[in-house]
Image (cartoon, rainbow, N blue to C red; front, side):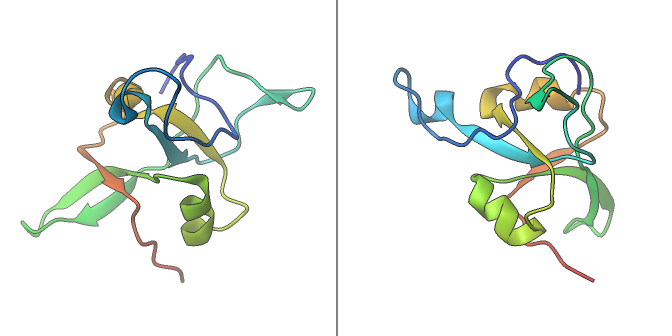
Length: 114
């Protein structure tokens, strides 16, 4: 994912003052490492590494997917407080995943530990 001004760290929300809920929906994506920061403020330019996972589909084949969560609280519940994350408008997700190899997005996945 690269240079996307719609990405922010530490944001939570589902509706803006204008537009429909779908237009303003924010998804929370786990990252491979924290967003780079200068003086404690996330840097908005550059690349971030989204977490992608292999899953076995109903067809028995492996598929590369991007886990995404509807809220920060759910990401923390399922992945832990130490999991770095970024928030992105749902409508920007397709562009953000371009070139990643992800075939689909798994919304609010249950994460196996161990």
